[in-house]
Length: 272
Length: 272
Image 1 (cartoon, chains in turn brown, blue):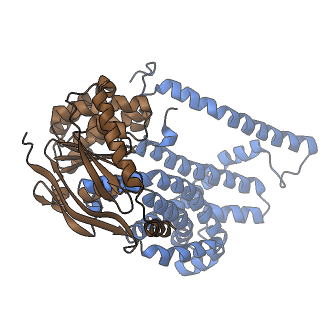
Image 2 (cartoon, chains in turn yellow, blue):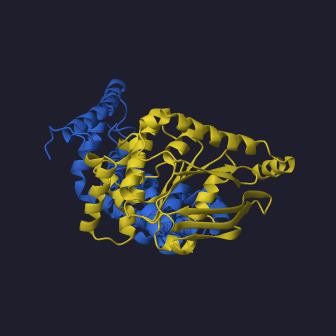
Image 3 (cartoon, one colour):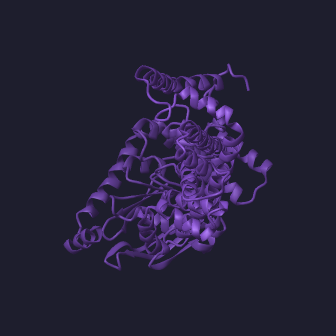
């Protein structure tokens, strides 16, 4: 794994909505390296989900460029470099679990035998081996999200984009999913960009946390999480874990106070 | 598949059939009681045969007059079926156009809704004049117009009820519009389409028979019912109505059956 090689280069990205009245993202410069687990954290309205979508070429930036694996984001999407997981698992009810996982492989034109082999591998990876023939609505929320992750990873995308994937789960399921995600990430060595508004989740998972501040969405600071991998449930009890959580929290708090009145107003107008 | 084995995800067929049969019991009881009440009332109050024949006599006439009733019913059924197929296909095609080119929606939908408020049945004599009263084409046209609107509105609602996340997911795989259409929009719309086809199946039979009341081939059931009623042969008229109803129910059940085959995954088919 080459730590120095950048997977994503975001340079001076700005995104405005509502005819330029609301600045969702302002002058974002970030680089994600191969194999990194980067979390984007911030209060709602800080543009973290927007930034994720700009990286994935689901939203076009108003200005600035996004380069993925050395090519424009548009080309990276056409080359199927992205796996995406949303807060809602976005599974298709008419497909079985196995066929949901196989969907991107079908789109890539893999033949049936190759698909089946990979689907079985992915089912084992997310520990749903015996659920391949079930339909999504027969599974619990946590299991559905595991299917969604398996689908995103099935074709080994260069970049896994996750938009608050565990936001809808209860705390216990969420902590278990965090551990599972880390173990999958370490097995596959993929690069992950993870959006969350949970500080402890961000610190626990990430090798780096990008703190964002709202109105307009800006990078408030970046904190390297030097807790060693593999991390376990006990990692959450370490003093250094708390120090890092406090660092992230301080950075969030400091930036949260700097809201200009006219920015608030512009946002309120856009919401009407 | 053994009917005795019940596994999650593969609901036991025997148990399911038994439960469905159980659901029919109240309807059967009410039906039988209603028929008995009908028979009993006629005997008790000596109601004249021409005012209201006994159910048993109507059933008997269905058999004794089978040589004329059933071929006439079949003739009308074919008209209804033709109208059902033409109207439903046109409805789906129109919905596809409006769904694909969303700008057509505001231009066409108000007109479609206004057109639906016109009592189409009142156009039956006009349609007869346009398409030759003695040919089945005029009845098909009435049935088709009746079927068109519910199918179009429901299909359109189905095609546009896809969640934005599902579209984003497909776009992240660089799926084309056509692929999104085939793999997401159409499967999402199928339950809506079948709901509208069930409505249309009943409407088509009504349309064909009403069209025949305003003139048609002598071997059509609508014409037969009308002429028998005019000569006060109500027993045969009632038998004709029974034949029409049975054929209408048959078409409805055929749609229900194909729905079960096509969308096994739909919510109402779920084993709760």
